[in-house]
Length: 177
Image (cartoon, rainbow, N blue to C red; front, side):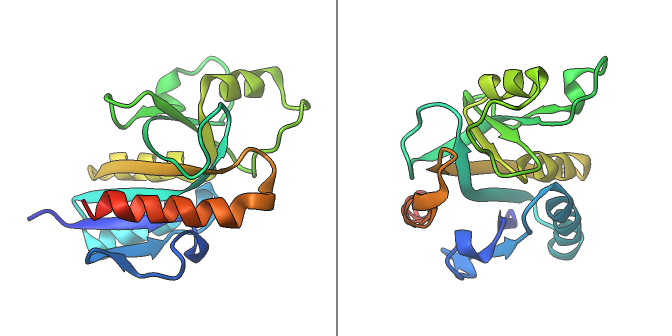
């Protein structure tokens, strides 16, 4: 039998619950460094066969708030001119067209991003701060990785709490099937 663990950035995304349908939930922290460090610890501690990441994300296209999206490709915001996409893009589900952009800060709608950064934003559907780091650590340790995100905002965080609560409920329904 496969061992599955769930990971989210913070207790706020899981409403202080510790499991869904008997599957344990772990907080991995906000941002790539916290996520990579905690994910590495969890792989050694829990020895999972499958890690399922879930949580809120910023909207880069026109996705419905609170709708759960299965991530197919994750792009890192690392600018490495002359290096291949292999170092900044991971395909985690070939059956999903949803592209996640992992960045080092909360996404906001403004125009002072670099040309390269704007190109990456335009290639992707949603944005978060942990996805790429989690996927990379799991890939490096040979652990299967899936990611589900729900749109909580599009640069205006005033409805984050409401949308995040609805998204979490929809994610629970998906896991309980």
